[in-house]
Image (cartoon, rainbow, N blue to C red; front, side):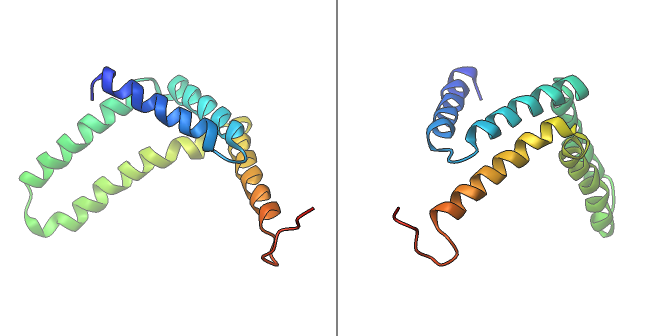
Length: 125
């Protein structure tokens, strides 16, 4: 996707997030900013590009040169590193960053609890 097309889409997504994010939106924005910076410092800026370029190439290469009865094993073999790549940064993230995400979740949950109590009718006062 070209930069001319991508930038307006990102700006629109940021605009929607800013005005319609609900409770905890500033905490979630802060979490996303801190998490992005931490990932770039820890894993590097281009790690994702390298991984997601080599990953499908290796998968396609392996699928082309192995028998069909190995497909399940290959799926497991390639599924595990793919999921590990997606989950590992969240598992290793420092506590001072993760607390921003939990705080944003709690703010959204508490606002919802205040707006619609368990009885089903909100207090008009």
